[in-house]
Length: 94
View 1 (cartoon, one colour):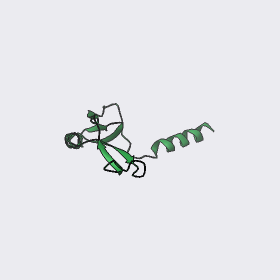
View 2 (spheres, one colour):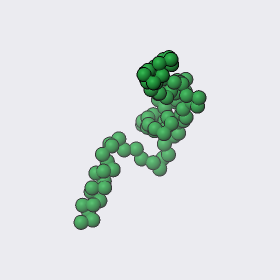
View 3 (cartoon, rainbow, N blue to C red):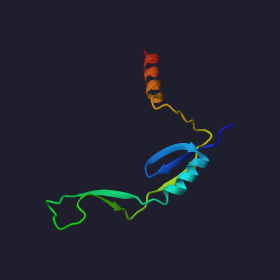
View 4 (cartoon, helix red, strand yellow):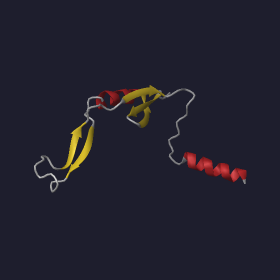
């Protein structure tokens, strides 16, 4: 029997994996620094260092959470599944 699945939520992105993997990833990701990028044009701001593409730490950390996949939810490991389902539904209507 396979291990129960969990949803790892990192900001607005969600991943499905085994519970143990999700917990390990949550622990490691929570120790990382979330960043934003800014472009400092050296022509417009010659006195600012560093210039170019600058990576800056954010003041608010990323939201990381692990939730068990409910027993009433099903996971389909095929990104084209829903499109195929809609196409099949349209064919059945005709």
